Each structure stands twice: as structure tokens, then as C-alpha cells.
Length: 230
Ligand SMILES: C[S@@+](CC[C@H](N)C(=O)[O-])C[C@H]1O[C@@H](n2cnc3c(N)ncnc32)[C@H](O)[C@@H]1O
Image 1 (spheres, rainbow, N blue to C red):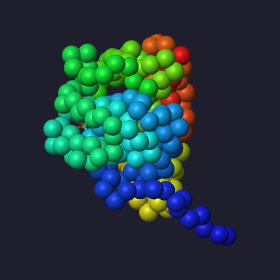
Image 2 (spheres, rainbow, N blue to C red; image 1 turned 45 degrees about the vertical axis):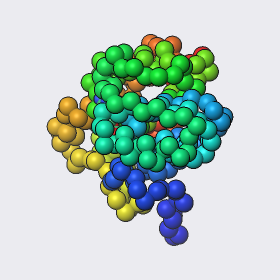
Image 3 (tube, helix red, strand yellow; image 1 turned 90 degrees about the vertical axis):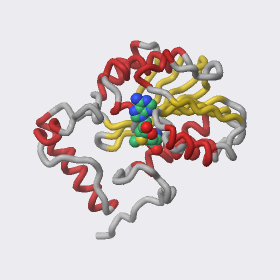
Image 4 (tube, protein in one colour; image 1 turned 120 degrees about the horizontal axis):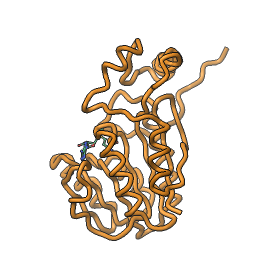
């Protein structure tokens, strides 16, 4: 039997999110999709921009973007400014809470593309829905929201399959991600900062805002959705 080598995935050494073995490949997919959609000078917004890691993957592929990033943490935004300013045409970083997007002064008009990565699980479900509604209102016709986050495992009977996937991650990638050994442990890990929503709920929330949405890529409980404003 031959062994399957780890895919040649571009993971930058300064990724702020650790213990997420499939993140490199899924971000590469997200950035590739965004780069094919965007042309120089187009507008992109990253909700939960952090230190700019994801936005940089996109900005490095499309010159001259008008980039807006929102995050709660001033220190993260300072990091984002340092890494993104040299890459974009225009940079607007907004310190603010995604729970109250409507009260934020977000500059610019409508966006060609919105992205959000590993951030919505910090929000309660009603704030997730409001954020999706805000994004739908702030996308240009034909604009796309690319969204990556963990989705909730809801079927106890299928939980052993997810455990097998987590175990396989360790074999293939040499590291694990946030996990649990039993369904009860998994449920106990759902807290105020780990409010993982159900896959089906996301699809219904996108549809409720008139977005044409589907899952573009999924690795176990980490799903990449594309939601287009038609
Ligand atoms: C796990 S990090 C992911 C950062 C970035 N998207 C990435 O993938 O590298 C989650 C980010 O969301 C931000 N965040 C969490 N809750 C937020 C909220 N309510 N409003 C704005 N930003 C928030 C955090 O400050 C953090 O930068």
C-alpha cells in the first residue's frame, strides 16, 4: 500500500488560528473563488477580519482591492493594517461588534464580495441572522458571500462518523482540531463563545434573505458556503 502524502497546501507560517488541519486547503479554496470573482479595484469586506490573514490571501491575488475589515479587537486591527495596507488600493478597518452591525459606520457602498471565516460561531443565532441580512443588503447584484465556519453536529447517531473523521485528521495531517470523544462532551462544549449553528439553519437563513446559497466545500463539520445575491 502507498501512503497518501499531505496535499501541497499553502499555509503561511503566521496563521493566527492553530489546530485546524484542513484550514489551509479550505482557505485556499475560498481565496481562489474570491480571486476569480474579483477584479482590480473591486470591493471586498471581511467580517471578523482578525489580523488580516484571510483578507491577505485574497488581496495578494487581486491587486488594488477596496478592502473593508470589521473586528472587535483593536490589536488585531492594528495587525491587519500592517499586513494589508501595502497590498490594497484602499483600506478601511472598522472596530465594532458584529452583533450590532446596523449601528456601525461601515464606509463604502455595496460590496462585490463578502467573506467571514471562523467568526459566526462567536455570535448568537439571532445575531448571525441579522448579520446575514446586513450582508445581503450590502452586496452588489451578482455579489457573493463566501462563508466558512464550523457547523453543528445534530445527529447523535452520526457522531461516531465525525469522531472517525477527527481521528483520520490526526493520521493524515498529524494534528487534530477542537473535538470531543462523546456526543455529550460535544454538546457540553457548545458555549457562549462556541455557538455553532446547524448546516440546515445556515441554508434557510441565506434563503430567507434572498441569497442563492449552497455548500461549496465541506470537510466534516467545517463548511464553506457560497451565497450569491441574484
Ligand atoms: C477565530 S478568529 C478568525 C479571524 C480570521 N477570520 C481568520 O480566519 O484568520 C475570529 C475573529 O472574529 C472576531 N470576532 C469575534 N466576535 C466578534 C464580534 N462580535 N464582532 C466583531 N468581531 C468579532 C475576533 O476578534 C477574531 O478576530
